[in-house]
Length: 140
Ligand SMILES: [Cu+2]
Image (tube, rainbow, N blue to C red; front, side, top):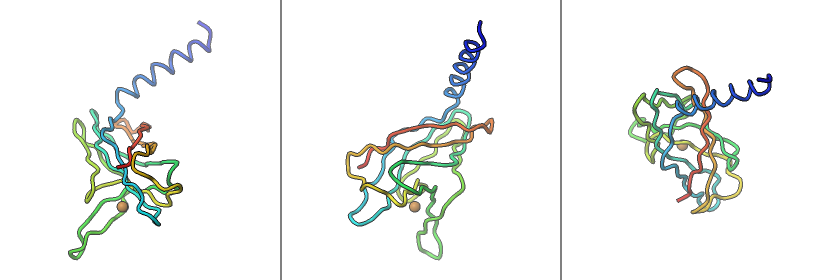
């Protein structure tokens, strides 16, 4: 086997192993932007066999993306940026309105109902290695 072939074979094995441990994202959706605003939020259910941490989210549709949680403070619901979200092993993390969500700031082109918004999610796997998952969130 030539060195380049051997390299290719290793790459294929590595990516298959990464996929087996990759978190599974279901029902991803985003809020359309309200007229005159440049903010939106993304929601989804994330499942993981091994456990993982969502570290970062990115989209070409927004210049700034943060992980947010809603907390009660002095009787008022407040949004708070979080460094990461934990996905429990053999469990699910639900991102939903009024709870944890992915916040989009500085949205460029307005997001309209029916748009498919690409999201790149970077997780830290149970083995502490980064796992990147790409999804399309439907605006509704
Ligand atoms: Cu928020």
